[in-house]
Length: 143
Image (cartoon, rainbow, N blue to C red):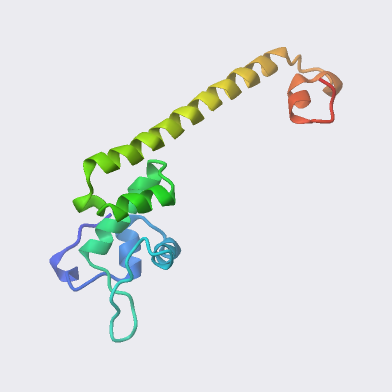
């Protein structure tokens, strides 16, 4: 990502914003459409002109998505004031809920890992009619 320089202080095109933040152009348009990213001003020719505020909000959204927050959670964080004004207590509640979801998913994955490891260990590698892996995948196969 390139830093914003004085020569680009007049504004960024959507392509420049995309390169700067690592967010796809269509995704930027989508975030505008669903009002997560404020609609930017436009040039006389109708081109979007993004500034530091839009860049920061878009980077905030991208980072939130990388951390596994869904769009509603990111929107809630932005509604609290985004990266500049949000109340730490309110943000903490959203993050706490997200952490609980992650821990539940990890527990589910550990159960799945144990089941699959047991099943693979029981698999002899011989003929398909006696394959425990196929048995747990195919609901029509007898177990």
